[in-house]
Amino acid sequence: MELNPPILLHGIDWDLLTRLGTAAILGLLLGLDRELRGHAAGMRTHGLICFAASVMTISIIALWYAIGSIQADPLRLYEASGTFVAIVGAGLIVFSRGRLHNLTTAANLWLATVIGIACGAAQWPLVLIASAISVIMLSVLRVVEHKRENRLLDRDGKDER
Image (cartoon, rainbow, N blue to C red):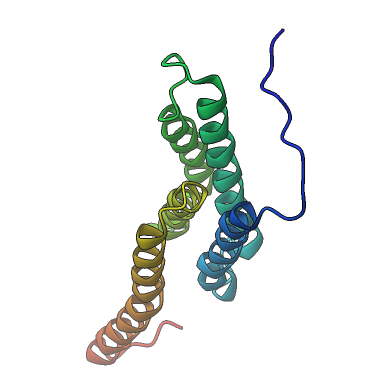
């Protein structure tokens, strides 16, 4: 069986380290909100998913260039990632007491996967914009939702907490 030639290490590959390190840090940051709120998938889960997506992307791109064949389709990475995250996300989503739980966590895992893929492909403007907007959405919208819930509770005159 023919395999691609091994890649020898000569010092530190800073490009590779940047791609993987950025994915790991951003994954942890995306999971921080879930961790602070005590949800099922926290920092470790988000960090690992974002990091794994980056590793997979780097490997697929490297193999595609090494093989140089049209038969290797790096875009299948999205199919595989989407299927995996869909299975994990579906396992997280729970309907209990008339309310849907963990839907945001499942969506956040998908986001961590996509950002990991973008890190692996070194699409830095996309990574920066997507990360900034997602962190703002997770933090600012949580505050807005909390204020809205408090206003509704005050209006009804009930406090169910």
